[in-house]
Every structure is written in structure tokens, then in C-alpha cells.
Image (cartoon, rainbow, N blue to C red; front, top):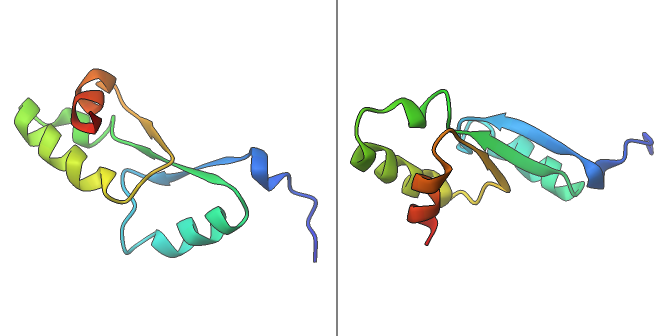
Length: 81
């Protein structure tokens, strides 16, 4: 049944990463046009060294999140480039 939810205008927070624990819901949300956001601020951004953070950012970016929330966007941009 059609729920009337404006799916294509939604963003869903799915956690600090996209992994085996939430990839099913991410696929379902994507099938409705919902963009999925991860947040690195409370987890990844808190690591002590830039090298540690960049290593984890690279790993997480392989899952192709639609949006990323971070306190350190310049470090993430450096990894993306």
C-alpha cells in the first residue's frame, strides 16, 4: 500500500557506518529514494591521530554513504580527494 510518505525528500541517519548490521535497511531506504547519512563525529572524529582517522574514513567511504556528518570535514575531504 502507498503510505503517502514523501520518500525522495528524506534523509535517514543510519549510524556511524554502513556495515552488515544496517546494509539491509540502507538498501530498502535507497529503493525508496531516501539518502542515508552516517555520522563520524561521535566515533571516528574522536580518534587521537589524523592517521588513525584517515584510515577509518577510507574504510567507511567504501560503503558509499550519501551524506557524512563530521566535526572534521577538511580531513574527510582530504581522504576523498
